[in-house]
Amino acid sequence: MTGDDPLEESEDGTPLPDGGAAGADGEGSKVPRADGGAVDDVALDPWGSSSVSDYRKLFEEFGIEEFDEVLEEVPHPHYLMRRGVIFGHRDYRPVAEAMREDEPAAVLSGFMPTGDPHIGHKLVFDEIIWHQQQGADAYGLIADLEAHAARGMSWEEIDEHARSYLLSLLALGFDPEEGTLYRQSENREVQDLAFELGAEANFSEFQSIYGFDGETDVSHMQSVVTQMADILYPQLEEPKPTVIPVGPDQDPHVRLARDLAERMRFFKVSKAYASFELEPDERALVVEFYERLEPAEFDDDQLRCTHVAEALAETPLADLETDADTLRSVLTKLEEAGMEPIRPRTRFFDRRATDEAFEALIDAIDGEKRVYENHVDAFDIDLAEAEELAREVEVDNGGYGFRPPSSIYHRFMTGLTGGKMSSSIPASHISLLDDPEEGYDKVKSATTGGRETAEEQREKGGKADECPVYELYAYLLSGDDDEFAKLVYDECVGGERLCGDCKEQAAELMREFLAEHQEKRAEAEELLEEAEIELESPRRR
Ligand code: TRP
Ligand code: SF4
Image 1 (cartoon, rainbow, N blue to C red):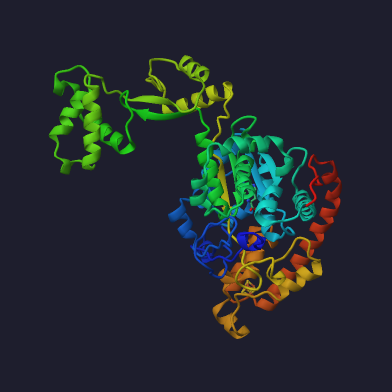
Image 2 (cartoon, rainbow, N blue to C red):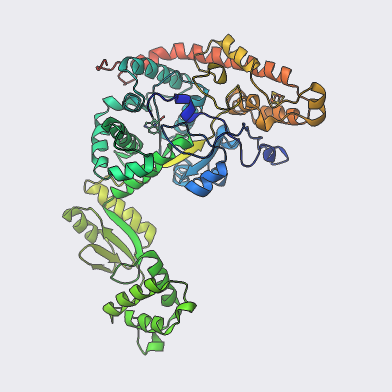
């Protein structure tokens, strides 16, 4: 797990589920999507060499949602969103809404300083910067502890690379006065939060999520809780929708962070029907009967637990959408509660609140309420109001009130030599530090989705969807200009564009981009000196 190629874990070749052509034929201004050659199977390993051969599996097996479905809710979406490079998300809606409504939101991502920043990192830099421009609090962090623990990087190497990442981030437009830059090792609050979050996670969980075993060093585990703290850090001052832009290899971290955020909460809010707890499938059964029974059928003025029990007992199991165990346990609970009325209510379950916080919550609930040992039931508050109230009381009483962090996922780029983009194969990727001429040469010698002969290409058109050069146009070289990206695509698949000229144009654009970026990096030196981030590790081994 140590010494892996940093590029391989995060930037590799991938095909598109929906194919680029979908955008090409007449979906308004939608730009055709870049596509790459197929590689391995789906495996989300933050330190392995993850690759994704089928993005659909990420939706089906991991529950990542399609970005297209939230696209409309995003104000002025970034071109990476419009072109499907950002293909997936978890819970991005609250972030989009906060940006629309000018409410607090945050964006944070982190970089392991294991090598030179390359065009894959640029995607993430751009995502952070774009969210910052939409008004989000922006955070860029250097994952130096992780690089040291999981990659065995020396502090000297870390310092050198960290500086370089930061220069590119600033050169691309990150505003250090508005935003926050830090390194994990220097951020005491992150360390403290990591320690607290660590109390909510245990080794078996790390085993099942990350495949850790008895050989895994403790610092590596610590770097995981540190990343959890990074992800929640923007919410230390106040809870707010926060998005973490990353590659899908980081999804296991996002899921764990969402879990931990929830486990830190004082109260759990849910819908309930009686004083006792019901499992979700039990609740479904009770709700069904609650809705269909009338108290008059039982000669009563209100529906009671015993009535539902009676009706349930008379219904054959085959007519119920449940199993025998669930039915039995519901019956027991209902019979024990006897004459207690069944009434819908909103429940605040006390998970880990202090006594004072629980008291404060009880006081804060308006209208009719019932107080039990570990929960309060409120009869005049709906679920959404209750969520708000629970968070408010938690924060007023010293809790964090974390919202589950959101994420967006970008596609991995295909290597210029086909297959994976890998930092161990210099010709396969373009570093932001590559000499502009070298960048030019790399593009000129890239593999393409072209046909055997010019003739064939004119006849059948090129395969832009499988072309790493088209990917460069879509992910980077076209910038915000959708029309240009679409033109390249249409000309390619229409057979009007031949690879020689196409690569020449791309190579020139790349040369220009690199020259300009490097100039801006030089200018950013000053900004970096002024920025509040430690550039030299006190540790030297
Ligand atoms: N683990 C990330 C990587 O391998 C780096 C990282 C550390 C990070 N903390 C983070 C990414 C918080 C996103 C959010 O590149
Ligand atoms: Fe790729 Fe351009 Fe050739 Fe089309 S014309 S296959 S986009 S290099």
